[in-house]
Each structure stands twice: as C-alpha cells, then as structure tokens.
Length: 312
Ligand code: RIB
Ligand code: CA
Image 1 (cartoon, helix red, strand yellow):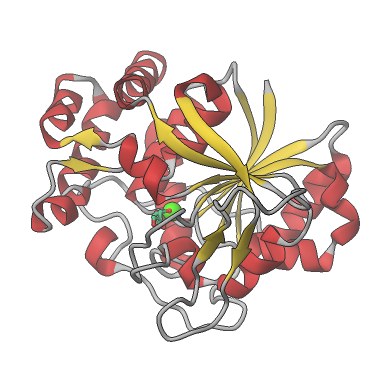
Image 2 (cartoon, protein in one colour):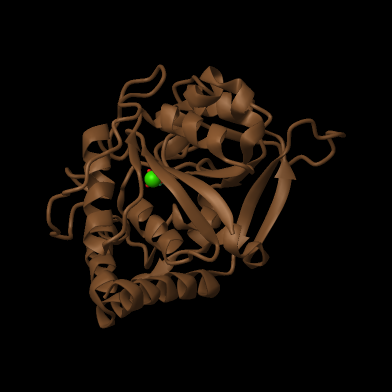
C-alpha cells in the first residue's frame, strides 16, 4: 500500500488514470487530488475531476492549484481534450466542492501530517510540484518519489522535441528535476508502447456504467489518433500508476535528465543523457522505456470492470 497525492489536469487520460488508481485500493491510498492548469483552465480541470468523483460515487479532497505556468503563458489543448477538457461524456455537474486550500498548501499539510513518506504522482504540468518544492524545500524529505507522466527520451508531441506537460511549464519542471527528489519519468516512448488499439477500445462498451463512461471518453479522445491515421491511442497518464503497481511490466534505465527551459525549437525538452560513458551519475532519474502493451491494456479493462463491480 502506497500513500499518494495525485496532481493532474483532467484531461481524458488523467481521468482514466485516476479511475485505475481508485480501482486498486490495495495498492494506492489516495490522500488527495490537486489540480493544475494545462489541458484546460484551472476551473475546467477542477470541475472535471469533481464531476467524475461524484459520478463514480467516491470522495477525495480536491484542491485547486496554479492557473498559469511559472513563467510561460497558459497554453490549453482543446484539439486533444475539447473545450471542456473532457469532451464526449455527458455526466451531471459536480455537487462536491474543492477544499478551499491551495494545492501546495494541501501538499504541505498532508506531508507534514503523514507518519511515513508519500508518493506524488504528477500527470499534468509541474507548476504545483515545482512551486511546492521551491516554497517548502524542507518537506522534500517526506516525498518517497515523484512519478511523472512527462517528457520523452527522443521525441516530443507539442514540439518536435518537447512533450506537453514539460513544454507547458519547463521552469517548474526544471525545479522538480533538479530538486534531488527521486523521480520516475514516464515519457512519450513508454506511453506509446503501452497504447490501446482502436479495435480494443470497443470492449469498454460491453461493460457496466463506469466502463461505458470510459468508452464515451475514449470515443472523443481517440479522435486525435484517428485524425493522424494511427490505429491506437496512448493513455499517457495511466502509465506511471501501472508502473508503480507492476514495474516488472516495464523496461527502464537510470539516466541524467536536464530540462531545456527556453529556445524556439527545444523549450520543454527533457535532455536524457543516453550516451552511457559519462561516468558516475549524480542525480539519475528512472526513465521508463518500454511497456508490455497487452498487460497494460488488460489492467485498464480489469480496473474499469472492478469499478463497475464496486460502484455499479
Ligand atoms: O503529453 C501527454 C500529457 O499531456 C498527458 O498528461 C495529457 O493529459 C496531457 O496533459
Ligand atoms: Ca494530464
């Protein structure tokens, strides 16, 4: 059992990732969820997670975080996630409200009160995480590790060499990567290797209420893949959670990783040093490289079936 805080910008894949974590109570004790602007505005991403938690019938403290990156301008992504950040499913508006605490104050309170260490899973831009570490560096020792969906070893998506979460707030990402806290990085390559086929997605329609909700999410979300002529969709944000549960399903390496914070072409690039002959590693990150695709997809289906069973 791992105590976790989830920092997110829901986001279709954020939602599926969080549902996967909720389905595995034996693995994750979710202490709270913090939201950050990225896929959409802070108001929309916060509203999205509140709506989904109410729809499922579960309660976790949700605390709103930063509405813009540390330095760069906000750059939401309607092409991938729609105007709401969660286009597709039609579910009731949220009844639940956020805690009223700022995300980094929730992180501070939770880390101070925890007996043991806490894993923070960051599946959006690292604005909250970076500013938290800058504001409360003394609490870094209470963090077991920071598991991140972000970056890439060789390629990007928002830019040729920059993945969106790092691209959106490279300055906060640099604070996190330079902090000395243990980092597990699930970049684009490992996420793509664990993609779900368009044909496999149809299976969600055979399930119960939660599986059907995920099917409706996927029917919108996979439109991005279809428009690009791809036969599969990466559920990017689920990968860090699945790694934390089953590291044996992945290939990974230990590498120095630095963040490019500026540059017309490379702002937000995770510069992963794969040269291998650079001697002693000073601040290596665990960089995930490849996933067992079929096993990852089975975990997604089994997770939603478990939620169908428990929450009807
Ligand atoms: O590049 C993929 C990442 O950007 C995912 O976290 C997705 O939700 C978007 O935020
Ligand atoms: Ca995300």
